[in-house]
Amino acid sequence: MLELRAATPADVPEIHAMIGELADFEKLRHQVSGSADDLREHLFGARPYVEAMVAVVDGTTVGFALYFFTYSTFLCKPGLYLEDLFVRPAHRGAGIGLALLNAVQARAEREGCARFEWAVLDWNVNAIRVYENFGARPNAGWTVYRKTL
Image (cartoon, rainbow, N blue to C red; front, side, top):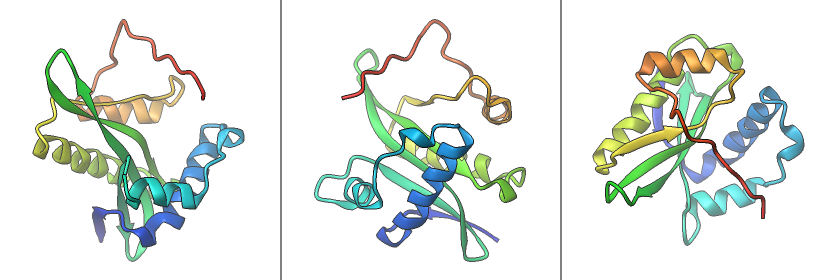
């Protein structure tokens, strides 16, 4: 039985563990430096910066979506950015990722967002297939830039 729900402070250790699993999958573990305490503060502290949803099957957390709100000056409306979507390997292919996408999209719609966006590694063909089946398309013509502070 799949349960999707907003994360609670008690979920932080499991979400943090899955962030590490995601980093392993993306071959980026060397970039993980944040702690579970950092995550807890940014999810549930005095000034939350992000929100998260967890997927639970038979009492076991098997996936999560972590997202935050953005703003479009051209549209003068909020948007929602999906920072991470992860389903543990043993539970992939069961529709859990799609269920999380639909739940986060519903959150964006409730908030009046004009956009729901995320990035995907170009080699992650399984995720790209899920996203395209979800109705999403690449944002052609744009290149993401980053400056680490």
